Each structure stands twice: as structure tokens, then as C-alpha cells.
Image 1 (cartoon, protein in one colour):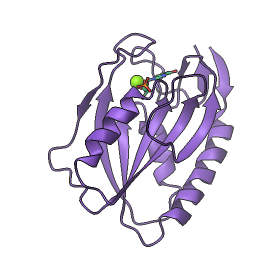
Image 2 (cartoon, helix red, strand yellow):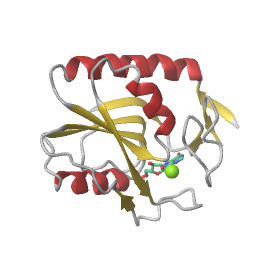
Image 3 (spheres, protein in one colour):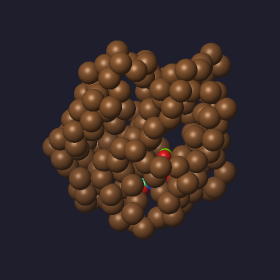
Image 4 (cartoon, helix red, strand yellow):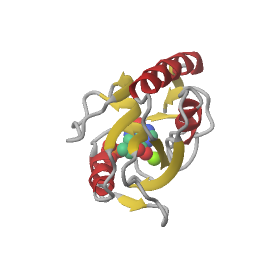
Length: 167
Ligand code: IMP
Ligand code: MG
């Protein structure tokens, strides 16, 4: 296990993202959507750096199973009462690799008629295939290594590490 991004670096970047989001969403009804489970730690830190009266919701996306590469079969689960009509949605993601998960979620969110959809991802794999969807806020660009910690897992473990580590 080798530290790629330390908790101090993460904390500083999350503050910057929160400031930017705060200024971009002035006077707008913002709903922050957390993608379970990988985004939980990032999400809980990020929303506390956004100085707005936002709402939160949680959606479930899974595609990896126990492998280090995406299965390509993205499964989504939404809360049954989720209404996005007229709301400005900020989708909070842990990491974009192939972009398949993101594109699947965003396509599905559009059918719920939100006022807008923007994406904030903590990590972007820079050599990976890019999603069709634009990433509006990105924390860090990383290489093709598989990382864990700060919410990210390998076979459901290591989500509780404070730093982002290469496994
Ligand atoms: P994509 O659909 O290929 O973009 O994969 C996105 C999802 O795969 C993320 O939300 C993560 O749950 C998982 N993932 C991709 N790369 C990594 C990694 O390096 N570590 C842990 N999870 C990853
Ligand atoms: Mg995952």
C-alpha cells in the first residue's frame, strides 16, 4: 500500500471545490446526489464545504463486483420518492474510469427532468476512456493505477483509509 494523495492534500482540494460550487450555485435550489458506496467519504466532506441550503440524496451504482476492471454492466437503484423536477443536481462521484457508470447515471437522471445536471468527481483516470458526459468539477487527475481509501474499495475493503492509496 503506497500513499498517492494524502489526507491533507484531499482536505485542501475539497475546500477549493466547495468554494467554487458555493459561488456557482448562488440563489439556486441545489440537490447533491451521492453515488453509493464509493463517494460516501468525499460526499460527507464536500457538502460541509458548500455554504448553501442544499438537499442530499443517495443513489446506488455498481459495476465492478470483485474485479479491478469494470464489468460494463452498470446497475442503478434510486430512492422511490426521488423527485428532481426543477432542481439543480450536483452528482458527486468518487472516480471516473471508463465513464460507463457516469454516462448511465446521467442518462437516467435526465429522464427525471431536473433544471440542470453537473458532475463533481474526486478522481479522474487520465488515460482511461473519457465519458460522453462533461466533468464540471474534478479533484485530481491520476494515472491508470487502481486506488483505494477515502471511500474507494477493492472487493469492499479499504474504504476507511484516510489517504488515497495505490494497492
Ligand atoms: P467506470 O464506470 O469505469 O467509470 O467506473 C467507475 C466506478 O468504478 C467508480 O465509481 C468506482 O466505484 C469504480 N472504480 C474505478 N476505478 C477504481 C479504482 O481505481 N479504485 C476503486 N474503484 C474504482
Ligand atoms: Mg466501487
